[in-house]
Image 1 (tube, rainbow, N blue to C red):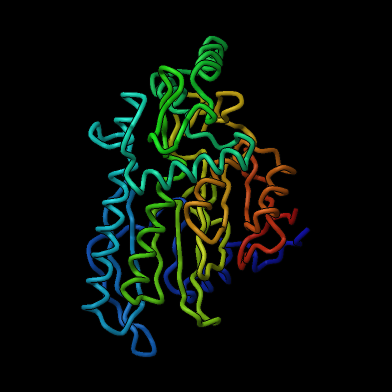
Image 2: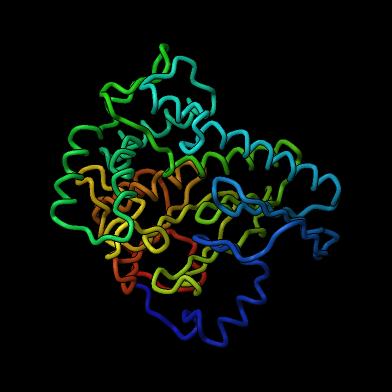
Length: 355
């Protein structure tokens, strides 16, 4: 177990000074306020160019370090365009989107490339996690939405169990040469737990294609950083404290990798906060073991999906699965008082027990 020291307290004067000296800190779980274009001079003749917009109902910021401001601005615009086009295929909220049509009609003969890629990744994660990740939980989520402002009861739990048994099951989402099909009437798909990661990956691909070597895309809980081949360059990423989201509980070092944080502290459906936007597919209920889980992986789509799945896994299974996939992770208990992490997590501030 890591033994805390004075410098591990992120609220101590010493640590606050260190954070200020570390430069811009990306926040996993919520963006720092800002908007529009920002261009700041950096050392070694590099400019920091930053643009923030709303995408996928989330503030998304793209930050680059480069020597050509104009070319970097063009690259950032191209990244946003690619992310927006990808998100349009993956949203369930636009009635005209291909995903909404699949949910309405139960089939989609022509599956657009980006939707096809994410559906395949979702099914792969469902198999890998033995169903802890399941894109067919939307009927349960829709029921949760009808309970806003009420306390969860045994009657609600029974209704959820009925919906789960009748309508939830990734094995009944078919994806083949005939397109995508839902094999049970009333089934519906949500990609909320994985789509944002894929969208961020597309933005990073656009930046790399434009020759950008040093950049970070911050989409709230989903962050992807690239640093070229320079081993001395990295980004510092703060993980919010689930007990007080105005505070940073840990700081991680991110280099040519992605991380995603899923938490139970922002979106609730029931007044007692037992029901939130993550569903355990096995129970049909929101999982109660953790308040926050962060996963670090090579691609945002993997980090996003795995952080969602991790909420429904007991700690030994979570640790074993992440180790097998070579992912790093950080988890907070339901109360936020206990913290666990993988042994190789690049934690540079904050404390957590190694598992």
